[in-house]
Amino acid sequence: MSAAPLLPQERRLVTAIPGPKSQELQARKLNAVAAGVGTTLPVYVTRAGGGVLEDVDGNSLIDFGAGIAVVNVGNSAAAVVDKASEQLAAFTHTCFMVTPYEGYVAVAEQLNELTPGDHEKRTALFNSGAEAVENAVKIARAYTKRTAVVVFDHGYHGRTNLTMGLTAKNMPYKQGFGPFAPEIYRVPVAYPYRWLTGAENCAAEAAAQAIDMINKQIGADNVAAIIIEPIQGEGGFIEPAKGFLPAIVEFAKANGIVFVADEIQTGFCRTGQWFACEDEGIVPDLITTAKGIAGGLPLAAVTGRAEIMDAAHAGGLGGTYGGNPVACAAALGAIETMKELDLNAKAQRIGEVMLGRLRAMQEKYDVIGDVRGRGAMIAIELVKPGTKEPNPEVAAAVAKACHAEGLVVLTAGTYGNVLRFLPPLVMPEHLLTEGLDIIENAFTGV
Image 1: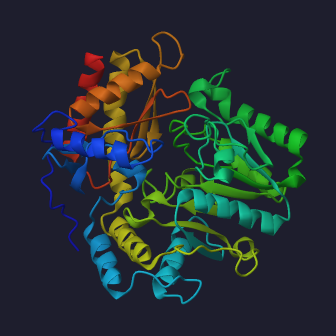
Image 2 (image 1 turned 180 degrees about the horizontal axis):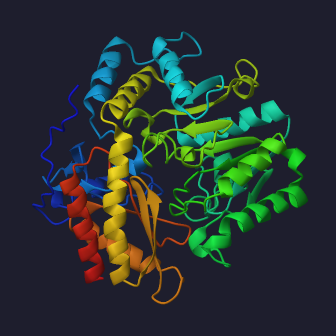
């Protein structure tokens, strides 16, 4: 299989960004699409692959977003296209709950094998990350016969009613959309850069506070599940201080609580490992996946210990489109590509290049308060010089400057002051370097 992208791997600007044809399409979008559906950068894409997006005006942009960590294997990986096309020609849908097909079973087998731990596992497939998280809660409640769910400051878990309740950030995810599901409790996370007594105390103190709050305010024997992203995505790529996650896992295990790793943004080689929780040797009871799983097609999963996964009654899990055959074929192609190209190694190399350059920039620009992340999941947190006060204005200005130069970057963070970088793992290194040059120039300009 050749994964060589068909598109020239170069940045090319022939118009201002966005160009006239993109502006025309944006005007149509504003008249046709609900106003609540926002757009970060209104350039309308016609082709994409490798590390570039080509728009309707003929511009070629460097992509540091990867569709929010979705196209880890690229936007048009050969095995994904081939397998999905073959399945598309055979049949698009039967509903697995009515008349099943092998693709769903094959994806479940792959996930049972790839996810951490050598215990017996089961998998159920869904459409989106939020659906996966919601079903993980259902499964945990069925297994434990308990109701409370514990989540963490700065966490993001989705946009459905239950997952909005699990998500920490109000705007834009929750504002005006309540009331939310009950029995959700939020506790502190080990955020090294912002821990008041310093990063060195962060893991132990945050774990002690979280556990104390659970014991006092909820009662450990009322908790069905503890859910956490091993690196918090939307919250600002916060990597909990080393030792925090193992302490929470140990507490969960001692109290019969289902520990759920939300690996929707971190999974499938993004951090230089198949799953980010492997970094501290964590074996979750349940793991939720989506985004990077199927090369851009909608698919999500809950994978976990067989006895927990099997606790829900027959018919209790499902959904009309869950495990769609075309998406399953794409997932098998994506996983094949990840193995064949050793995308974990590629993610590690991206991390080395990015962290080196960004830390050098941090020395030069005092608005860069923190540089963090693993593999190809890297972020910088921007502050007002000489303080740790969030600086969302500079984050927005730098992002805007990058967009104008043909580099797609995303912002994030509870305070809107984080620039996050998620290049496709197949991006050639010259584009990575050129993108970093654009970021450095943006800081110089801002």
